[in-house]
Amino acid sequence: MAQLASITLASSGSLNLSYASPNTASIGNLWYDNSDNRIKYSYYGSAWSAGGAMITARSQLAGAGEQNAGLAFGGDTGNLAWSCTEEYDGTSWTAGGAMIIARRQLGGAGTQNAGLAFGGQITPSFTRVSCTEEYNGTSWASGGALSTVRYSLAGAGTQNAGLAFGGGTPSAVSCTEEYDGSSWASGGALITARSQLAGAGTQNAGLAFGGRLGSPSFTLQSCTEEYDGSSWSSGGALITARRQLAGAGTQNAGLAFSGCSPAGAVSCTEEYNGSLWSVGGALINGRFNLGGTGTQTLALAFGGTPALLYTEEYNIGSQIKTL
Image 1 (tube, rainbow, N blue to C red):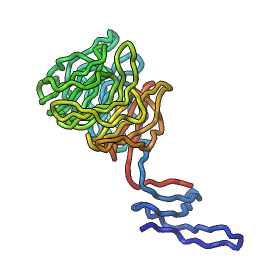
Image 2: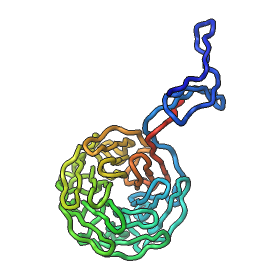
Image 3: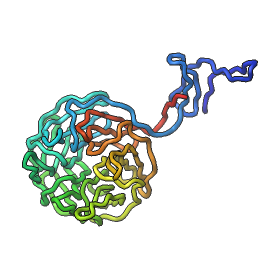
Image 4: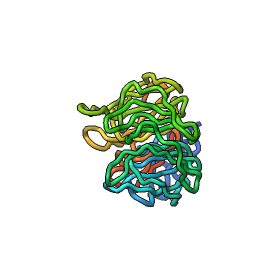
């Protein structure tokens, strides 16, 4: 039940709200915070908050894991690809083992102690690669190569049941591949071939959204597709069409955030319920080419263009607002 701090009515007719200990464990509570002399209330909603800054500022990176056990790897600072890996504990980032192949615009999946990195582009030659690497929480080891060499692709799933889809060769492709822990096999093609898209979910329940078509139109996409382990079907369209966005969550509880629209970087977040997207809380720092991971209710956003250190944490639940 909602609580209201003790109040009195002044002779002037104004309302006096006296100090009360806040009850932030539930929603609908109103109180006066004497630490900053402001009135605050709690409500149910979604919001991003600042997390610990990354060690290395970068964009076009990939991510895996959870909000309190995140993994960031690859990316670039300008036109220089990086091999560095960082691990997030819910508060700060620490250095992990370096990737074997420094690259950017790669795909990622898995967890902090069982990560998967695949595809991408190396510099300064800008050569596309098919190599896969597996992370054990300390170091990376070589895995089976992708069948289709590509970059700007999306990923989902786990280290032993990964999913790679879309991307550029440089033309936008529709191909999907499934990883079994040692090698990739062909899966069902996307309905719409595209690159610079985002993904979420698992190998047998994947989610693909956003991105852009290939030459000559390069049209931004709002379309969503759902994978059942063998084929893709159409889902509800994103509210905001965009590319170079990030994703988190599952097929029935997905999260799409930030990215690039014709007007530039956007901060908008959208939540998917298995059928439709709805508006979520906006990021503090709108950006694109960022990394993302986690769940719909506890997500993590990090990095972005131009080579950023920002980390933000998403939460759906009890929030506090200051009047």
